[in-house]
Length: 229
Ligand SMILES: O=C(O)c1cc(=O)[nH]c(=O)n1[C@@H]1O[C@H](COP(=O)(O)O)[C@@H](O)[C@H]1O
Image (cartoon, rainbow, N blue to C red; front, side):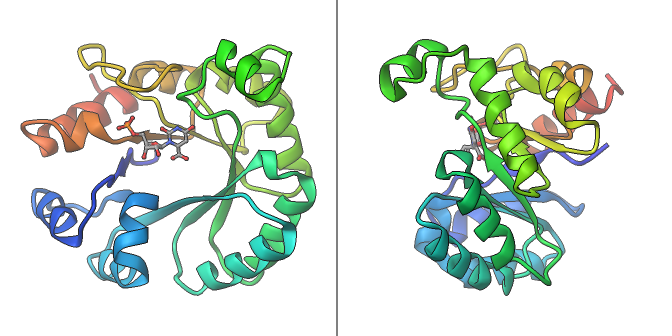
């Protein structure tokens, strides 16, 4: 069972140090735009020096040439996973993969954000299919482009496995233990539901980082995710 990925949605290295100081084991952490835009590659090198795996979540979405060049730069950081928006298209995803050639960094594509409801997808994107159909379409395109998997919600995981097979990564944010508020997330599920529905990884931010005792919350979530509780 892969470790839960902790979303380090912080504004500074000091906050990262404070959180990491509460753990004694190697973690899988996610660095997103908020943190990376303020602390940059030095922070990535720092987290790696502490022995943690990193998902660098910058959700690239641009013309293929720009994405390929950006990925060539990110490949040098030696992170474990990066992502693009599947909405950037098949050619953009292929370009992203070319940019990572020679590195072992996994590349995944965001399908529909877990903060998006079906109604919002219709209104904002004028995409008039079901949300699951849209996510499945993006998953198929990501697979066709040779990517390692997708970011999706737990609610679509079973349908994606049927089409893309069990080895295709399904990294699922929008994870909330039963007692925790959904905040801005619309398509949420518990760690246990993620296991049952076949997620390969869960991403958990606020349920850990805003908790009174992050290490204890992490341990509870990891136990539920792995079926030990
Ligand atoms: O790519 C992501 O990581 C991502 C995709 C998505 O569809 N939904 C989503 O919530 N995320 C990220 O996952 C994390 C979820 O954080 P919490 O809602 O606090 O658990 C945030 O860092 C989001 O940026």
